[in-house]
Image (cartoon, rainbow, N blue to C red; front, top):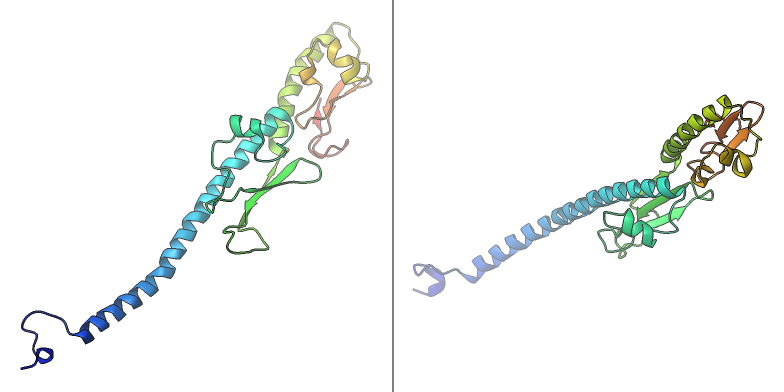
Length: 210
């Protein structure tokens, strides 16, 4: 009897081998897209985590400096504030763009450089509104204590905060500006000190002071 008609020796025919290879090829072909999707989802999750960490670091930087860094490679920002990765999962630096006022920045990534996209895969806007208010409130609390003491002692504000009033209250130059880096305003008529708030305009809802 010919070998092709008898498999008592436990071997496989060429046809059986080809069938097995075809099945394996089909399985591999169906698994590849699934694995690719899982990899991309993992990368997207990491981007979300990275952007959250960078946003937090940028807020901390603004709180201390009343401005955002020029870019994400700023030496002070990298050494003292950044704790997470500043490069995306595809090895590219995260994008960074300031708005015209300098009070907010947009960070993000376009994903794989092999895929030329017009729009970012993910973006996050970081504004100085919250941290600016916190820093302004802290400074105003210090100013208010000194101002109350000054007024009780018979002092009178001149209306020139950075030129005379701040020094008259015995306060240092670090209290010249509010949390957005703008000079406080003092008013001789109302004996008040105010900040123009996030929008930098007097008489609007976000003004802060007493």
